[in-house]
Structure formats: C-alpha cells, structure tokens
Length: 125
Image (cartoon, rainbow, N blue to C red; front, side, top):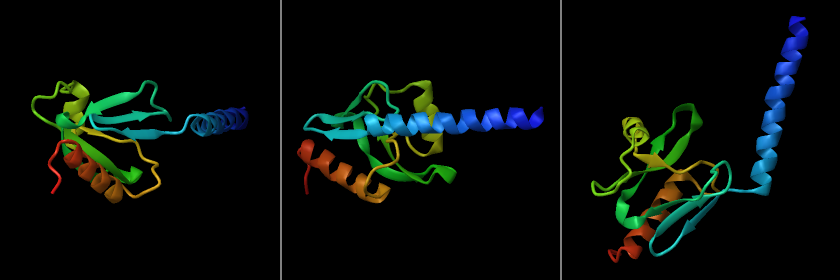
C-alpha cells in the first residue's frame, strides 16, 4: 500500500512539473524596458508587473541561497511599494527581485538594467 502511495505521489509531482514546463513553453517570461520603466510578464507571473524607473534606486545581484543568483532592486523612499512582503524581501537582500531564467547572467542583466535606468532618467554618464 505504501509503495502505491509513493507511486501516485511521484506521478503527481512530476506531472505538475510537466504542466509548469508546458506553461513556460506557451507563455515564456518577458522583460520589457521602455522610457518610463520595466514590465515583467509571462511565465508564472499572472498579471504584468510594471515598475517605474523613478521608483527604483538601482539593480544588484544577490544570492537566493540554493536557488542561485537573482537580480534584485530596492525602491526609492517615495515609492508606494512598501508592503509586508517588501519588508521581508529587504531582509533577504533587496526589496524585490526579477524571476530567474534569462539568457544572460544575473550580473549582466543588472548592468543592462542599471545602464538603461540611468539613460531613461537622463543621468547617463
């Protein structure tokens, strides 16, 4: 009986993995940059998330533990993004973060986003 239960548990676990994989094939993650900010959409993000450049202090790379490196960002003090989750995230290294899985490294992505942000805000140097 225990063997059958483990078998069904494995089928459910790997079946869920297949569903997530297919979902990501149909709806891949996208990061859209424009003059006003950036939008994260697709993948496991249910609704597009837009963040204005003026609300971001800058982008950095932080360790997500065993999950590897992630690109994070902190909000400017005036930004209205100070939720409980934001405060918890800050204790981990950043107010918010971008999902993983991009075609460039976290370091490269952070550099691109910082450069784009500075240009959009008219502070290119």
